[in-house]
Length: 339
Image 1 (cartoon, rainbow, N blue to C red):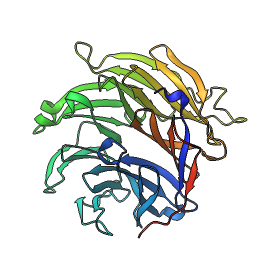
Image 2: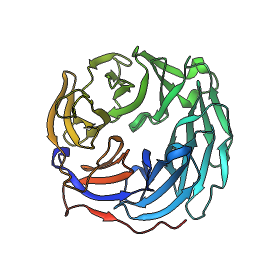
Image 3: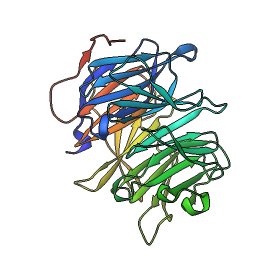
Image 4: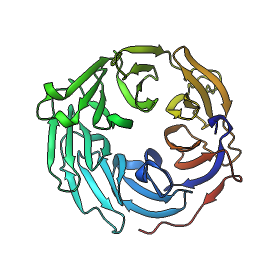
């Protein structure tokens, strides 16, 4: 189903005065549960767990999560205090810390096959989720703060991709992690401080998004591994995203496997979402997403692809919205969370 036909199908309003900083889906499918990391004023935060249609289930209060992921029935989240914690959803509080408090905030977390990787300061740490044992500490891969880590999807799921303020994008083979020299497979230099990563073509293509919304497209397939395929100028000043003198924002990159097409999602400061076709030549505007009065009214910062043309978004207005091509108009979900 084409992303361009998506409309807002459901919405959830998080704690008043909050904004959404990260989203995750159980098992990566979105069929079971979703989790949202919510930041409140004065430095406080929550983790909110929702059903796939955005009905409230549970809320963990008093945690300032920067990123999160699911492992079976457990939410794993990184925190501004440098720790990584596990929250079994059958209980009301985190059971244990996978990684202890540090002077450096933990900015990103990712999981595959029971292995957790975390970006903390200039280091990348790996731990076994079941035992809590630290498996590796890649301390010298980046010279500046590591902003994002993601395991590569597809057959190369043991590849860990990292990005940092030094502009580097590194691919680590975590099956050969005893030494950094042996683990580092590819190093790419975008010469831009990188904020986020996305994959396309079953992990054969990497897209890096800089802090100024410049996108770089990189090949991860042989024999062109690590080759820069395109540098795309920021689309945030596109006329469809501008509001007065305020530019928009690149939210995320989606990949539609059946069609083999990649899309960029952009947001205006007022929450209007626009979809663009993404290729090596640039981005081409497709359409505004249909939200009516049920969508966002503040800048959208994060999105999560649920596959089959469905995705969720989170914004500075404290809303989580579900988008898809079928079903009725969006309805607010107001059921209170169990705390």
